[in-house]
Structures are given as C-alpha cells and as structure tokens.
Image 1: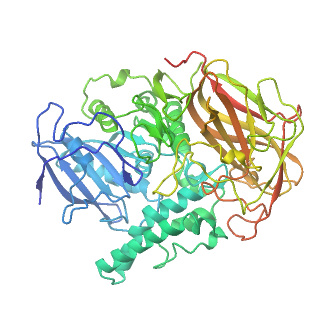
Image 2: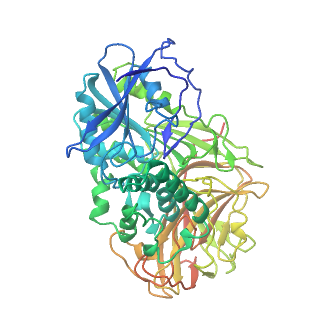
Image 3: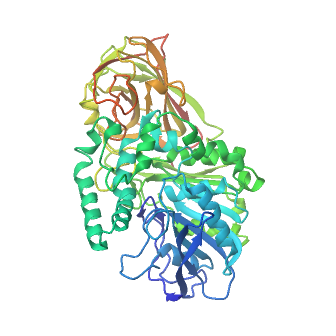
Amino acid sequence: MWKQCVAARVVLAVAAGLIVALAGPAAAAGQGQDGDTDGVRCAVEWAPMRDGVRLATEVYLPAGDGPFPVILQRTPYNRRSPNPGSDCDSGTGRYFAERGYATLNQDTRGRYRSEGEFDAMRQEAADGYDAVEWAAAQPWSNGKVGMIGGSYVGLTQWQAAVEQPPHLVAIAPHYSSSDYHKGWTYQGGAFDLWFAMSWTAQTLAPDTLQRRLEAGGMPRAQALDAVGAFVAEGQEKLLDDWLWQLPLADFAGFRRSGNIAAYYDEWLARPSYDDYWAHLDVETKWPLVEVPALITGGWYDIFQEGTIRNFMGVRAEGGTDAARNGTRLVMRALCHACPGDTTAGDIDFGPDNVLDLNAAWARWFDYWLKGVDNGVADDPAVRLFVMTPPDEGTAGGGFWITADEFPLPGAVETRFYLQSGGGANSAAGDGVLSGDGPGGPADEYVYDPADPVPTVGGNMCCQNGLLASGAFDQREVERRQDVLVYTSEPLAEDLTVIGPVEVRLWAASSARDTDFTAKLVDVHLDGYAHNVSEGIVRARYRNSDYVESRLTPGAAHDYTIDLGYTATVFRAGHRIRLEISSSNFPHFDRNPNTGAPFGQGAEVRTATQRVLHDDLHPSQLVLQVAPDVRAP
C-alpha cells in the first residue's frame, strides 16, 4: 500500500556503502525545483529477474498522475531506514521524486530485502538489464531510465550499460572502476589487501552472515547479535591480526556458516587476468556502451584511474555518437568515503573543492530524460579541480579548469631522473631528482616482509574508522632505511602537473619475485611532505597481467610503475620527491619474496634490492606538465 512520504532532509549523495554528504549548497528540505513543497508517495515493490528472483525496490513517486522519467539506483548496501517499520527513508529518493522523477532504490540480488544469493560483481550485468527494463514497463514510468550511484553502485551502472537495455538513456557513475582485476582487486599485480578484506569484513559479509543464520533457524535478535559480534571482531582484529595472516588463501575469517564470502576466495585464487575477470571487464566492452555518462570522481579515490579510463574509453570507443560526444568527466580532491566536505585526508583543499552531486545529477537527467535545454549539451567534456597545496600547514586550496579532452592536449612530458652517491636511503640520504639525466652508483636496501613499510594515506577504500585515506605527511615513512628518497631542488616557479604519473625503474633483486613501490610526494616549505600519487608493481607481472614471469636473481630488469593521475600545482619553493621501496602495507599484500604461487605459502624471506640509475639504466619519474595552467 502506498503511503505519503514528506521530505525532511536532502542527502547529497550515496556512495561506497556509506551515506556521504558531498559538499555543496544543500537544497531546502521538501523544496522542488520551483520552490513548491510536494508530497512524495513511496512503496516497496518487487522487481522480478529473468530467473524468477525478486529484488526489493523502493519506488518514490512525485505528486501527480505521471508517467514519469525514472532514476534507478541499484545497491548492495543497506539503505533501509534505521527507524523500525520504515522502508521508505531515502533522502536521495525523495530529492529526485520532488523534482519530477520516479526514483528507485533497489537492493541487489542476495542483499538485505532482496531474494537470491550474492555473488559480488558477477551478477550485476543481467540483473541490471532486467531492472532497467522492468522499471521502464511500469505504469508510473514513461519508459526513459537513468542510473545513479557511486563505487559498487557505479559498477551496477557500467555492468548494465554494456548489456544495452533498450530503455536506458543515460548513466551517472560516481568513482567506480573500469577493470575489476587490475583496477579494483589487484593493482600492478599486487592484491589490494586492505580494500578486499576490510570491504568484505565490514560491509559485504555481515548481511550474508545474518541471512545464513536466520535461514538456519536462528531467531532474528540472536542473529543480529552474532552479526554485531562479527563486525566488532573485524574492527578489533583487522589491523593487528587478520591482515598479517599467512598463507592468504588459508584465511578463515569469512568461513563461518559455510562461507559467507566465497567471492573473496575466488579473488585470491585468480591473481592473473583470466576469463573470470574478462567477464567483468568494462574496458573491453566500451564499444557496447551506447548511452552518455556523467563520470565523477576524486584524485585520492581508490578507483581514480578506472574513473578516468572509463571517460577516455567511452569518448573514444563508445557505441553511439551520444555516448562518445555526450560523456563528461568531473574530478576533484576527494577520497573514497572520506569525512569532511573539502578535505582529502589531512589537507583541506578549500571552499572551491565542492560538488553538489545531486544537483549535478538532476541537471544531467533534466537534459537527457526530460529534454530540458539547460546547457548540458554545451558543457565542456572535462572539468578538473587542480589542487594547490599550502606553503605551510595543511590549509590548501585549488581552482577549476575545463578542457575538451583528457589528458590535456598541451601537456608536456617532463622527466626527472634518479641520481645519488649510492646512499639514497631515507630522506636524510643523498638521493636527487634531476632533469639533467641519471647518475651515480646503484642504491641498495633490504626489504623484509616481516617489517613492511606502513601505509600512510593514499588512494584507498574504505576507512571504517581504522585506516585513513587521502593526503598525509610522509616524513615518518621517509626515515626508514628501506625507503629510497629522491628529492629535487626547490622549484623556481610553480609547476602544474595534470595527467598520468609514471615511474620507469631499473632494479635488481636477490629474489625470484618481489615488489617495487613508488610514491610521488610534494615537499612544502616547512618540510611537510604529502603524498600526491602512488603505485606498485609485482615483479612476476611486470610484463603481462596474464602470464607470470619470474626474475633472474641479481639481474637488472626494467619496470613501469603506474601511479595513476593527478592535477596538482607544485608551488614555487616546494620540492618534488619520489619514494621507492618494496611494500605499502596493509594497502597491498606483502610479497614474501619466495616466488611461491600467490597466496599459498607462509614462508617469508628478505630480499636485497638494488635501484640502478646510470646511463644504461635511466630510472626516471615522468610527469605531464601543463605550462598554460597556472594558479590564480
């Protein structure tokens, strides 16, 4: 039965398993576009999938008879009201219903109120197609459907789009990836341990555990207590116990009530790109995307690279003119589910670092679903917030630029070569970044998996109150002898870097398999050193994501380390710094240096690493400098 729902507040965005307020002027509670207060009707309906499984779907309808254009959000995260007995409590649902849209909030298969079994990521293509077509066929629908949401809720959009449901008109994915192997579960061949384990333990597995316990006959109250204990166990043990357990494949934390996260074991069993990952890969299916996408993301987001690659891929290869010419990209200083409106970690990037995401979505769909001539067609393809970190302290700023494409066509590839006297260990060493070319004897350090370099900020997900992401001071890390530090002279003038960041490294190891990490750092006038971007490469995957290739111990090999993208200004007087090491834990799993099959062994060994930077081995940092872009 339908009931009257009057908007009490506006939630600005839904993302990453958390309800996150993304900064921007909040619309007045209960206000439609014309300023009138409109009631919103809401009920839970059941959307049947092709195999008969029914998905619980909150339907928020505007006042009036309709039919209405539809905005659909498909989420594995609990959007149910905390108020007992209330199923219709989505601020996002009310926000768009008040603006004339039938707004749907759907629990994905096997999650919360929906039927079926949850199989992370793999279920969303077919179910997304069916959900769009079901929504288009309802009596309150005019047959035009758009999709919104972030993180996994962005994944549900891309997976639906490549299936080409006939009534899908446009999508708006917020910080979500393009390749769920190397841009979600693995990076550079290394397992994204923190994300995979914390996301599973704190966000995905609890609901599955509750469903299993109740299906086995446990009373609901007792099941909820057991789930609460499981979540508390993860909070207590993640950092100091679970993440350290070896072999990785033997981790038993999710093997209760059968196995509440079989997909986690599947990820561990498939470190190489194979048919499992190809089934999910959006990058190979860009030509199948026939609808325009408003793609938004953050420079410190875990899915930053995939967000940008989806934009570039659809613009270049999308299946229709609307997809190629209509797709847009907006990037700002944002990390995944970070608290605060304008901060990304420890740095506040100022009042201009805002995006009212709901307002941006509403304008997007007003054009594509309602046909409102509001200027969307004439918007620049790219809108970027360029970060300007502070000279001192952590109160920074930034400014917005627009462009017709990304990377910027006028960017100049600029190389900074590694040099030293053979003692670049720590920031107190003699490592130098220079535009003059490489030089000096090799630098050496010992990587010990039992004492890995700790993660301090970076592009991660998700905090869960345990491990922060974003920009933070790296000076404590740079005191370690197993971190090589190369630093430029103070800059004579501002240097604006916009685009991909890459390290081309020559290195040798005593191991048959190991890791190399790289981190780009901005050193302020007062010595504060914040991370700009980072990357990792697992030696066995240095040549291919498909086929492993062990090292020849002691031999020099070349590595390309992808550090993602950035848009930042290195201020005059600041110094550019590059850190090279072999671990970033617990962000990534520790390479045991044994060469054993991934995840199978408990043995760890130390490895002696040598970084070369002579004329035959020109190790270098490659930046894209935008000479025509300057801070106001």
